[in-house]
Amino acid sequence: MKMSKNKNNKTQIRELSTTDEGTRLFKILAVILIVFAIFYFLTGYVSDYMDDRNNETDNTPETAVIQYDKIMIGSILNQSPSEYYVLLNRSDDLYQSLYESYISTYKNDGEHLDVYMVDLDDSFNKKYISEEENLQPEKVSDFRIQNKALLKVTEHKITEVYQGDEIASKLKELAQ
Image 1: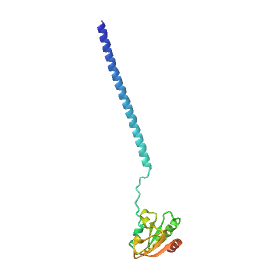
Image 2: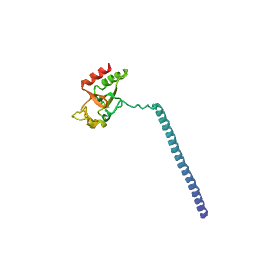
Image 3: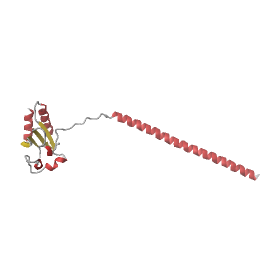
Image 4: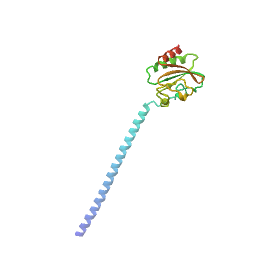
């Protein structure tokens, strides 16, 4: 009888352990499914939030504007019209807005010479900035400037130079 009782215990233990393993497997699968569901819904929420946020921003492409009036010092003598003005100035100059206003008024006038602008702060222009000025060189490679200037170029040569207060006076005269 002892043997039969021992056999029954082993069978019961086997049945319990099988049931126990099945329960554990079910719990593990349930936890994995719950974690998966949380990530699924969280990802969906974040995705919708980002879509809403992107729709609020203006995605209209801006039209590229080519600046034909801004040039480098190396090309001040090489522009296509035979006669034009070149304003060499720093972008943070106190008079920059005044100069731009005069130039805008001048350009709105019927016939006018082209006016090109050179930003002396541009890294491509650094090699032309010097303590000793040469504003009317034979070759552009010899051109040197210390501060702002307005140049009139005729037939690929600098014919007139305006500096300091003369710049505003000349631009005002052109604008009238």
